[in-house]
Length: 370
Image 1 (tube, one colour):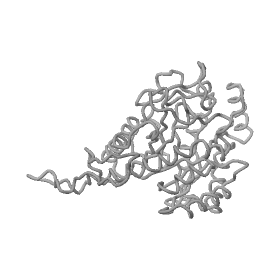
Image 2 (cartoon, rainbow, N blue to C red):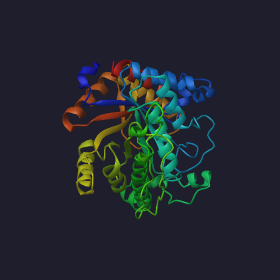
Image 3 (cartoon, one colour):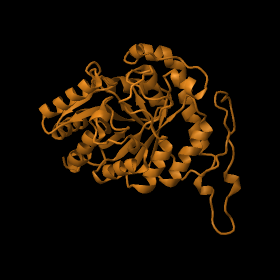
Image 4 (spheres, rainbow, N blue to C red):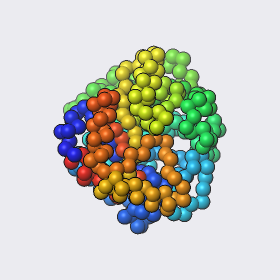
C-alpha cells in the first residue's frame, strides 16, 4: 500500500513492539530462537530502524511491574512463553538516539510510582528526542503488581472483569481518578524548568525562571519541584482506553491521544459516539485524537492468515481472545480496512499489535505502509 493512499499527515500508523509478538505463542513460531536476543539493544534498534524505513509513524513500548501471563492477573509457570521485558524508558532512549523513528510512545506505570521521577524521566527523554516522545500513563489493575514492588494494595481486577465496563468502573474508579491527578501533576512539573531558562556565555541559567510549584490543595500528589532537567518540548499524553467510563474519562480529561479497542460487541462507531459524549461532559477536555488499537495476523492470502492464527492457537492450547479486535488477512485487506476506517469514522490513526513480530511486524513495515 502506498503511503499516499492513506493521506499522510491525517492518518498515522503505529507498531506496538512487545517481546516476540502479542500472541501468547509467538515465541514458539517466531524466527527468534535465542531468548537472550529479546533483551539486547540490537533487537530493538533493528525494529526501530525497520519501522522508520518502512514508513511507520510511531512505535510503542510496554511497561509492566510483574511478569506477563496468559490470563490477566493470574501467575503461571509457563516455560515456552516470553516473560520479562526491558525497561521501556531505557529502550526508548536507545531508539531515540539510534533510529529515525518519528515518535516513541513510552508506557509508564502511574499506580506504583511518583510523579516527580516520572516527570524527570520523560523530560530527559524529551531532551534526547525533542518532539518525538509520547507518554502513555498506565494504571495498574493487576493486584500482583503491588506485591512485586512492595507498594500499597490496590483493587484487584479479575480476569472475568476485564471485558465488563461496569466492573472496570466500579473496581478501578479511584485508581483512574488518581491517574488523572497524577498526569496533571507531571504536566505542572514540566513547567518548573523551562528550556527558555537556559542561556549561553557567562550566564548558564536564568534562575528566576526555574521555580517550584505553588501547592494549592494538591494533597494526593504534593510534589513541588522544580525538576532537575529542562523541558525542551512537552511530551504528548496518550491513553489506552478499553470501553468503560473511567478509562474514557481519563483520556478525555488529560490525553492528547486515545487508543480505543474495538470488538464485535463494540464496533468503532459505537466507541467513537461513547467517547465523544464522555468528552463533551468532561470539564477542560480539549479534543482528543482517536486511534484504533487492534491486533493483526497477516498472510499471503486470507486462508494463509487464518491457518497461521489456527497454528498459533494450537501451539498456545487455547483460542487467542485479546482485549481488542483481531484483524486476520492480507496486508492489502488490512490497508483497505484502515482506509475505510479513516474515511468513514475520521480516525487519526491506528496502533497495530503484530501477533508474531518477525512475521506480522515484518509484513506491516514491508507491505502495508511502504
